[in-house]
Image 1: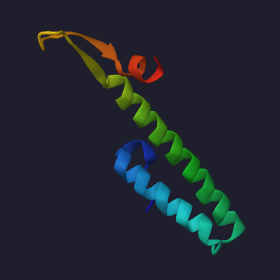
Image 2 (image 1 turned 45 degrees about the horizontal axis):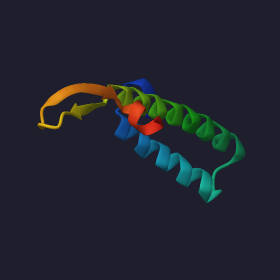
Image 3 (image 1 turned 90 degrees about the vertical axis):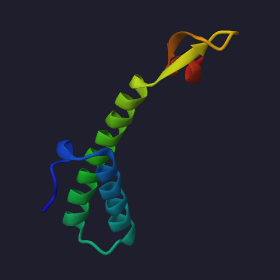
Image 4 (image 1 turned 180 degrees about the vertical axis):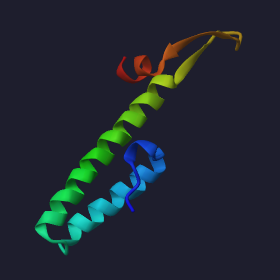
Length: 82
């Protein structure tokens, strides 16, 4: 039975996505099944991207003063994109 994607953890979704890729790369499934598997793979990919985006937005970079004390926080993206 296929688990509802929204009820999966990131790790479960990635594991299933890897299985989808292996199935499609094998070329051993019929066209109709391949299309359905591909569609599931797209949904899994989107789910994983959203989970990563959500996690990334929660990560803060601590700003440390010269004396070693924490003087503030910056968004993770400021460091990556800046």
